[in-house]
Length: 534
Image 1 (cartoon, rainbow, N blue to C red):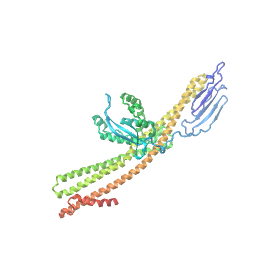
Image 2 (cartoon, helix red, strand yellow):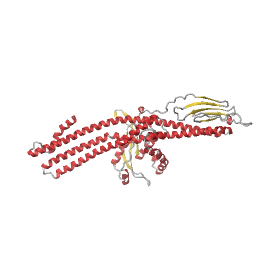
Image 3 (cartoon, helix red, strand yellow):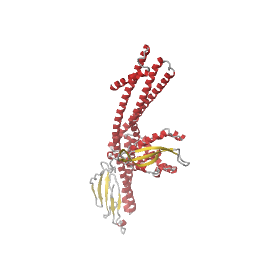
């Protein structure tokens, strides 16, 4: 920013007083690249101007310094004192964050049909109950209810959009998506309660993740969402109960959403895109390259893990189905043929037991792999955070360009306007340049804050990822080892039972029990212990 003060009390020609408003004082903010401002009327010794100039870029980089230039009719004198260091105005420290709200629960889904001809299909509303952070005395597990409101899924979508605008550069928790069967349910107007209960659980997880987020947890958007007792459309027009209000708001914000959100998700996260946007922070450039490669790996690997869990569950289902059909064969066909029914009964029992154990393994692996799925969803929001940084860099570049144009216009016109006595127009140019400079400074500050937030958010996510992934991998390895030992024991027991059944049939003896399955249980205990021990 540059303070330009000019005063002229002389005369421009005989009998012509140029004293504008008794002192002709002009204050403006100018910016000159690789140059300086000269006296507008240097031929008159009574004219003098003092201006604070900056050479180099308004960016505030290594060559950013200020110089005091005094220009008068006799010459120019310049001094360049160092700029005083400025403390950062924003500090991102997730370690000092304390949640404003206690645990949030989403319960009691109710199917509601809005009145009116233009009302949409029926929708579910959920009770959002917010508790205090402090526990009730004498009851360590309970806390008082602070607020209770009812919200629908559309409100959660608006919450995410407004939180993203309020917390630029933050990597927010992923919001639950609409289910693929939602359109079919709405078309048939028969929405199951199971769907609503599952959605309520997902929304509860989402709200609790938001309240624990170091930036979103203290935003006014979340506070309004959790505490406003009235319909949320009173404060947020995009979720108003009036369809005309929603259409007006949607028409006003559609262009912004398409320009920022859609292009940000499609754009690949790499160093080239950041440099094209004007990125000059070496740490952020290196982070962009590393995170781009990591996100690419996550997007390829996590679906394979999820598909592997699905295959395990499918294998369990097929084993159970084959075991049930084989048991039916034993009961219906070989009911009176003990010689033929024995081996089939043993095999059916082994398939059913192995299918149940494999199904339990699929459930355990699915629960342990949730952290991988969470990181897969977070890739989208991390890209959006880097897109916030790119958008801020573009705004900073445009603001700097506009400030340079305004400053050049002022420098080029000031001599002519002062000689012609058009001080009002010169003052207008000065105000325009000052305003452009202030916008540029705000854009620089915003870009720096978003970059600072982005660095902290990536570090926070990486720490959580290392802890969660390590724990999940240990749990999955333990589950696989235990399931393998038990399945080996099941099939070892089946093999021993088949051998014993064969001996019993050959010797026509009943020393091995009345039922073939008793031999399986007789052998399994010792085999399981031995396998787990090994």
